[in-house]
Image 1 (cartoon, helix red, strand yellow):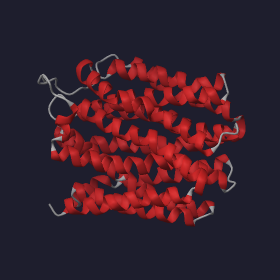
Image 2 (image 1 turned 45 degrees about the horizontal axis):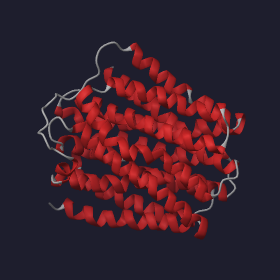
Image 3 (image 1 turned 180 degrees about the horizontal axis):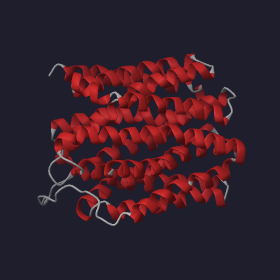
Image 4 (image 1 turned 90 degrees about the vertical axis):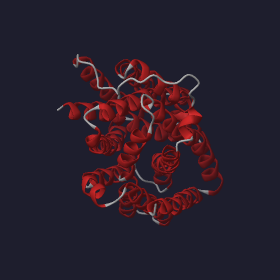
Length: 377
């Protein structure tokens, strides 16, 4: 029951983030923003997390996860309420920054909790359950946001999304006992981030994690743009994106069996290959059912990798620095989320969405080629 509680807490916060991302991009388009402006607004989801994730991880290592998660949930509720109260393009710049930064604290804190809950032998399974929670919230978020936009309007959709971090906040306050945390270990003076990159297992995990997360996060940016250009309604775009999330849920149900039969790097190689191939096909499909099928394949590829990566990351981290290692990974992911939407927005404004899909496909397939070498070691 404790694991279900932790997963539910994280899923409620993630639902607000996923729904907020889709609603932000569509609201910005509705307010007359260009593709480049939408890319700028979306990049702000990751700008401050890019700068603060390592500090947040160190704070959680020292002080424990409860207070950072509490602060993150309060800020997440405020971030979703701002566009509801002040429905302007300028406010979207502020709300996207607040949403991304708030969820960063929740994300790093909950990864610390999940990694510390139970023994080492259950860690991969615990992260698989957390990933299942992400899949549920990732599938519900776009559907709820799309339906709320079509029936209530963009600004009121943000008001609906604010209910979920408030529910998570109530759950956290209801629990009186401390949240699990890793055993504290003294960190050697002068230890820095570069020490983590000197550990080969961590360095390789950071690299493939960045590639896969870029493929995951750019989907939430590119698909609304592509769907809007094809003339789809918000609910249709939400249904397409929900198909992606449902696929991640399906594949994560099979993760215990996959982990028993395949080594970790074989799973990562397969994930990169399937994801790259799906992105290469996506610009060739112009119907909603076709995009649902390709999105489902993409979700199968990207969905199977996250539990394996998080387990590798936690196991490879030096004692007492698990939160910092998650912070480094989060910084790398948010750096790509900050700059790549800007570049992708410029590229799509100049040449359309298709070149952006194909460029991402090339990066993922290149990563698959590198991961193939690890499968033989």
